[in-house]
Length: 80
Length: 173
Image 1: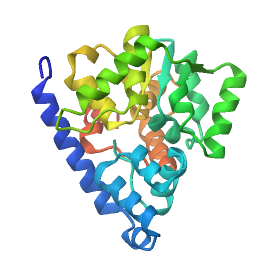
Image 2: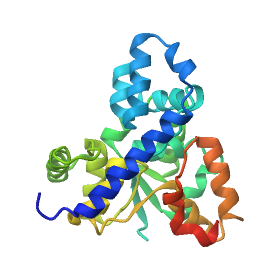
Image 3: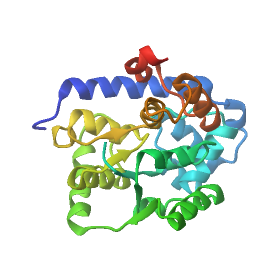
Image 4: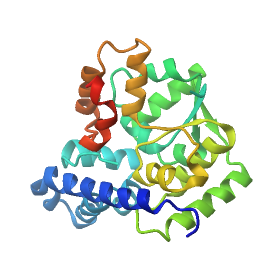
């Protein structure tokens, strides 16, 4: 795609990969695995992608409600 | 720095958890929240903070402008063709408004932060994360210590800044 700064793009791919590793490391997996399927999958998706909006939609929650659950109860740090 | 800012959901849902959240209005006269962002919020604490800000005239709802909306959708589409986290519509709309109206964009969203860096069409937009807001508050004397202010913010919001994020403020930390 014209005009895109490829170097910056690669840097962000790496940044977001690091962010995923941090979420994976600190998440409370015991809590996540104990949730009903819809919420468990949404939390796992959030760990992998950081995409709180789609995760909240999966869980049928507001984005703020979902993020509160993810950070305070599932221990998932917010990184990007 | 612009007197006005536009905030997305990723910024707001963190910032309302910060015990010194009113400090935001030391930096900006008005913080706009788009209709699409407002529609996403459901928790009592977030909505109460927004309602108070609207009552006090420190927050304002930003309507959907058709031209900006169209451009935001184009940005969403472009970003989905790249091998990096895409920008969702609410953040894309904030970025377009930031560029067209000269408003500072307040976001923690990786997709929006990345766009500012890799897409030259948005390189001129001022995009701040809470980390940057706290730094500016400290520089203006509204926080006693940047390091302690940041520590409190991270504790209260569970936002985590990486070493890469913090590197630009190395001397102040």
